[in-house]
Image (tube, rainbow, N blue to C red; front, side, top):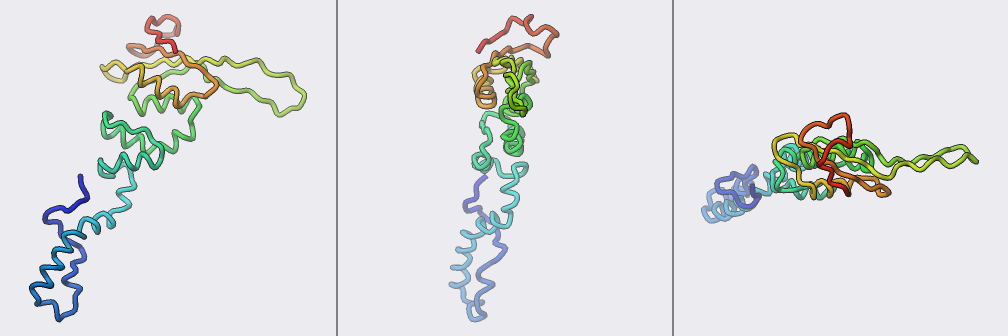
Length: 195
């Protein structure tokens, strides 16, 4: 879609009708202002519909990438349109959950369309009581098990990219790509990608 001159788009505010009565019958003045109306009609149409441009559910497709840059949303033109719209719509929520198990799971589902199970979350432990002993070190490795929603095999490089963006910075991740939902034993799957 383009917001440039659109042939035949009428202006909601024709300039010729707003001229003084003296110019109402002037052929040159009416043709001249009609040319200006052709240029201004897309501008008025855009301004009249501005709230729709700022709503990722209905914004024009070519405007969606720019809107994604406003909220720091992931935007990949290879994704289906509905997934790109949802990524922009939920970007603020995902930023709030960044570095958490929930945030990583949702980011993988939303951006790559895969299911994920995370077995450790790399949590930090603290105490508000002075003088207490230090807690044991939490495990710094996260196991991320991913399986596709459809028939396509997920791309490990793209999965790692999302994981590195959304994981807690002090942790490392191990990735397993499964053909379907996980079994009860996380060590039983041979498709361990390491990482």
